[in-house]
Length: 122
Image (tube, rainbow, N blue to C red; front, side, top):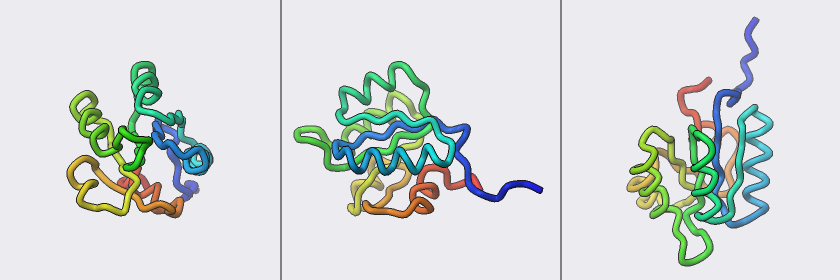
């Protein structure tokens, strides 16, 4: 009999959020599902991680520490890594539609986060 619980064992996920509580909460939830998770608090740190690890997903906050903006960064990510799934953390669906494959509101449930990250994995 196959285990029906969701898993992210084949996923490497980069979390970019300047709020350490949010980063840790998302990271803990995704690690519990088996994902390899790297956390970054700045675009500079995210760039460094992207240079060393092949990620399947980037989970990015819209409102980073100024002048950084998550939506602008995700547009750059799309150009450099077009196969990487981009998930924006926001309630502004207009921003998400222009720069991301999916979005989640903060706070969100683990199920909502999983649906945004891996919508076809059941």
